[in-house]
Length: 167
Image (cartoon, rainbow, N blue to C red; front, side, top):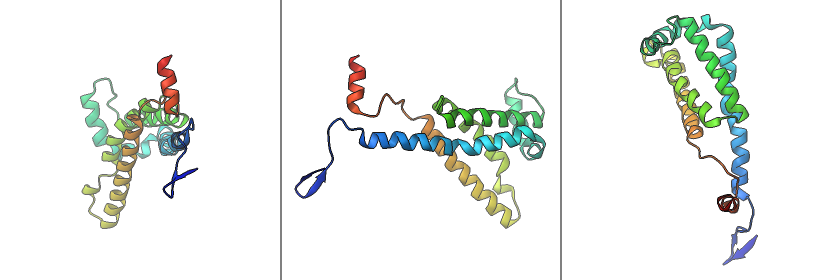
């Protein structure tokens, strides 16, 4: 590393540096973000009846707006679980990460409203528990939105981008 005026100056050659590090972090972060969706999707597809009573009010309200959806809460919960499983697997594998993150974000909103309505709880302990889960899901939603809006990568270095533009 070069030193100028007593301070280190990073190398400005054809090194990937921080961009390569960001690519590695991004490749590790996608499976971490996808893991809860895959596990909950497997559980929900296998046993939708455990979640259907809780999800029924929100799921049936959405089914009224979207005519192609079934009018059965258990079928809607199983469909949401299949979406979590499929899109979570795609996101974790890095296949269509922006589209799968957007699909997961769209399904996370009604899932969170149905499963963690802390404002309806009267017991203070359950209310606090649901509030923590609600804000945790909001954090995951933020991560999904960052992933969904991330620019497409064409290499990790500015000089590679220039070379791609030249043809």
